[in-house]
Image (cartoon, rainbow, N blue to C red):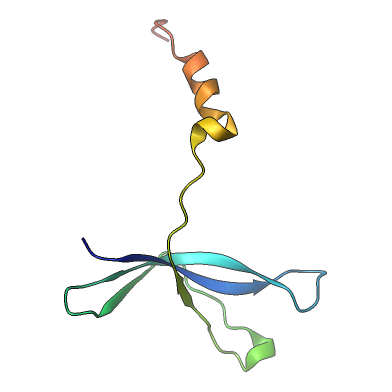
Length: 85
């Protein structure tokens, strides 16, 4: 199985000078020759404060929060019944 990554770009936090958050713009995989293939879902915007450069970094994918932990699964289970509409 090939290694997978999240492709993220830093975006400034408005109202918090000098702070940023990571926006996921795509995914990446490593092929059998060690080359990394990047798939973009959206195009990152250049940062005018940093010489109009686009910065992207690869991160290990985060585990998605289990639905049961957030209570969403329990809500869906309660709504599952035999009523046909």
